[in-house]
Structures are given as C-alpha cells and as structure tokens.
Image (tube, rainbow, N blue to C red):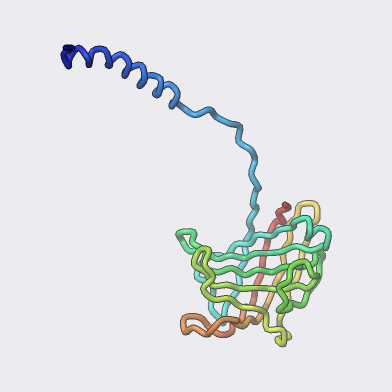
Length: 191
C-alpha cells in the first residue's frame, strides 16, 4: 500500500504544472484596438419653469439622423442632471427645420412628419415620473433657430412653450408648465 505522503508527491508536480498553465493563460488580456465610438458633442441651455430657475445647469444635445437630413430637420434634447449625474428633467424638440427662423410648436409627437413638436418629462434616471405635451392654444409657443453654421453644425436659438400633463394629476408636479426665457447652444451630431 502506498503512503499518503508518497501520493501527494506524485500529484504536486502535476498540480503545479496545471496552476502554471492557468496563470500563463489568464495573464494580461490582449489589447484590441479601440474603435472610435459615437462622439456626443453637448452644449448648454437654460429656461425657467413656472417662474423658477432650474435647480442645476441644463445641457443640450442636437442630433440629425439620416431621416432628419432627408427631411431637412434636426432634434434637440435638453437635459437637467443633479450633482450625481442622475437625469431629473428632459425637454425634447423634434422635427425642427434646419434653417434660421421661428417655428410653431404642436402637440403632435409623430416623428419625421414635418411638424415641430415638444415633449417634457420629470424623470428619475430612465423612469419618466410625469410627462407633458404642448398646449397648442397658447400663442406664446415658439422655437427659433437664430444662428446656424451648416459647416460646423453650431446652432443656437430661443424657445418658449406652455405644456400640460397627460397623466393623472399628482400633487408633486404641476398640471401646467410655463417654460419661458429658454435658450440653447449646441453642435449638431450626425448618426
């Protein structure tokens, strides 16, 4: 009968060989070339809500996808994030003509139909807590493109919009939003 220490002696070199093989194959992973991702050039924006300043700085993101280019339009998303980067508010404008001018905002939110529209949401990260659409009867609603450089994609302008909720009323959020004195500066991103 073979003693236990003798059995261990025979297995130790095999175990060491196995550990060495694992160590060598689990080394530093091969570095793969980094593929450039989609660069998102952000800008700035600001507005008041029901007479109050925003709680944090707003940022803008303008985008033209192929369908926008075909239609001659762009979309603009304005976001407000807290100090931890959590999304609190988003104000979206879509089907805005890619030309200088002032445009009427409608309630319709069908994309790429040629009608400029807006949507607002109080949010907590990806969750929409309260959503609002344009009140079309308000004559103060507008979105303007005041400056546009087609070569660099830089665009800026102003906006004003009255919005009403379309969900059940909740005491934490107003029924109507009066978004006033709005402005934005952005560089259009293409996808």
